Structures are given as structure tokens and as C-alpha cells.
Image (cartoon, rainbow, N blue to C red; front, side, top):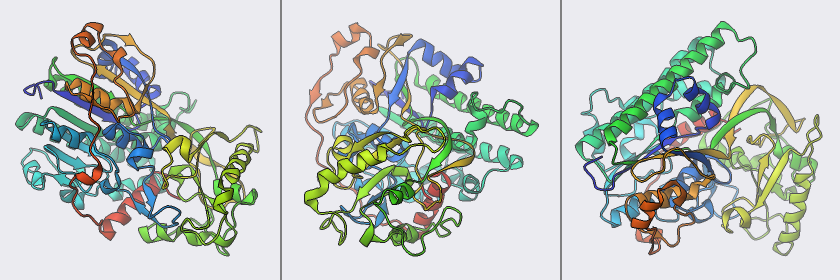
Length: 534
């Protein structure tokens, strides 16, 4: 990495939050991260709306928000107003990524484990998409023969670097205490596989920008938040709970060692940035939003809707496409199609809908829906359960594929789309859910030491990376270079410059792509296990 002029490293920690990292650093379990934070810059990083993985990491890769890059969720309608959903992939990204931009500028980049990067976009450098099963990982690599190269790495294991769904299934059915160590160790080994790939490429063919995502914090925090968060930790923990907590601590210790090796290999002349796509926090209850819409008169279930007690049974891609059979569309004007979107869609006649409201009534209907949702009260506390709402124009620059209304819950959790006899039900235990603010850390030549800066926006990451590499920031980027993190003398010598806009995505070459049914269904299983599907 240090062989390249203006080399820069981006380390992504999916779901990382200071509420977990700070106690670990204070306890001496993450000494590298602690030194990194104290000798550089640290602050929070505001995520996208909603704060979930696909739109957030895509914003980091493009410098644009979901309304302009086209990724709002794990799924998207086949067309505006359609009730049929498809898994998102790189062909749905509607603007240029930073990897393509760097290629045009004669720069090389390494992009490892970023979601929504399959099929791979041809770049100068190396790319392996995240969120791909190990059986299909070869097709998610660029250049096409990259996997053959990686097999020469000592200790490389294709099955671990992909996804082991028999282990991930524990998120669905629960992780028995006696299996917790194995499940946590699996994520440690998986992180290490990505680390080995990064270090190998850095040694054999260093790139100007090397970027990697470690996704274990997100996975472990979803399942074990009650053991990681001191405020949720049992007052009288069992011996098993104590052991599991130590397994978790060991994982974060090993993750810290990997970060330390990356920092050491990079050397003092490299700018290193550590970010997360969103934060995390506790949730004890779940809101059944479609049942709320039923109570408000916006939604009618079909004769035999799936109830939360029955479960969905079939969670294949075909079942996702058939989700519309749960509702009586002739009597439904507003509904939620996926929990992960926290988005309400409105049926508008003529917008691929036979039934719904007239387009001339859309504005008044939207405002009434918004007010009705904001008036929903928690049955026990009497407080509003929806603390904030955004219209499509407010959140997504008017994109026709985005939800008409996106909501934020009182506890930042995800809604359920299923029918329930109660609008709110308690979870079996405190679980981790996505919070809006993630982490940002920076260290390197010209970066201030120990400085406190205001919260940054996730849209600022791509401009920052380009500035670090000495390149102008495209004028159509939505974010800005966070100049407060740099020493004033550096900014005088190298002022921020704006450059030409990014290229239209139609000008970029992306291979044709159709995901195999087996791969689609495995991803659906994983999304259900992580709570992104009912």
C-alpha cells in the first residue's frame, strides 16, 4: 500500500457503534482502535434514511444518497407501483461508483466485501462483492480469474469467506448457549479470511485505495446485544452468559489485531479512515405496522393472511414475490412490503395499480396518512411510536421506486409486515437494531491529532477519499470534504477542488446478470434470519 503515491485505506466496520467500542477500548480490549482514536480524529457518522446496509454502503461508494443511487433496501419493486419485488444488485445502482471513477483517473482500487457489488463492475484493481454465497463467489470477483489467485494464499478458505448458511441459520432459530462459541468463532474466521485477502493484495499489487468491510459487528450485535451493551447486561448473569460475553470480547480483540496489522502494513504516510454504515442500539418490542394500517382503514387482509403466530413458512424469492397475496388490493390504499424499508407505499390508480387512490388526491392523501401514523400511541406508555416521517421527496429526491413515506420508530427498530392481534409485541429478549449514527475515525499525515469535530454525514466519505488521493470532488457529489479533520496548513497547500460530474451509469460496462434461484433463496433465508424479512 505504501508503494502507491497518496495511498489511502478505508476500513468498514458494519454496524459499529461507540456505545460498544468505547467500553471495549477503555477496558484495554481494543488497544489499536483506542490509540487510533486518540491520535487522530473521531466523531459520529450520520447514516442514510433508513439506516440499513445496502443504501448506506452504496452511499459511501457513490457520494450520493439513495434517491440518486437507486438503492433503498435489500429489495426494490420491478417498476413504480409494482407489488413484485427483486433483490438489488449492482445493475440497479443508477450512478457511478468511486471504483469506476478512480479507474477513469488512472488509479487502482481494491474493494472487498462491499454489498451490492455483484455482478462485479470492471475496475482497475480488484473487487469481491459481499453478501454472496461461497458457491457463487467466483462470479462476484473482478478480474474474473481473481479467485484462482486467492487460492494461493496460505490459509485461504473459500467456504469461510463466503456465507455458511447452516451457521447463519442460528439467527433465525436462536443460538443455544452451547453453540455460541462456535457461532462467534465462525465470524472471527470469516473476518480473518477477508483480512488475508487484503494483506495479500497489498503485498503483491498495492492499490491507491484499498477498502474492506468487516461485517461481524453487525451480525454479533443483532444476536448478542443484551450481552454486549452494559446497560442491557443482566444484573445477575448466568455462568453461560458470562462465557458468551468472553467469547464476544475475544472476537473484538482479534478484530482489533487485524486492524492493527492493516495500520502497521500501511505505514505512517497512509491516510486511514474507519467508518460504519450505521449505528446500533437496543430494542425490546416490535411494531406491526400493517396491522396499524388495517386499524386506520388503509389496509384489508386477504381471506387467509399469514399471522405472526403461524410464520411465513416459505421464505423463497417466489414467496417474496407472492407477498401481495396477503392483502386484498381492491380494499387497500397503503401498505408495507418489507420490514427493512420501514416504508409505507400508496396504491395509486394508473401507477401499475388497478385499485387505490386517484393521482389527483395523492398530496392530500399522503398528508392524512402521515398525520394518522404520527398519532399512533404505545398502548402502555401513551407515547408516539413513530417519531419521525419522511415523504419520498424529502428522503429520496422524488425517486419513483422509493416508498411514499418512510418512518422512524421510537426505538429505531424495524416494523413487521405480518398480521397481529396487537400492534406492539415484546421481543423474546433485548435485541440489537440499527441506529442512525455510526462511527468515523481518521488518522494519517495532515490529519489533526485528538481533534473533536461535529458529526459527519455518510455522504462525506467518498469526497474525503478522493481528496485524500489528491483528486477533485465531482460537482454532482452530495457530500463535502470534512475540512475540519485536516491541519490548516495541509488545506492551504492542497485546497479542496471541485471537478467534472460523474459519468452516467449507461456509459459504464456492467455484465448482464441473472442470479440463480439457489443463490436468491439462500440470501432470502439470511435476510429473514437477520430480521429484515418476516
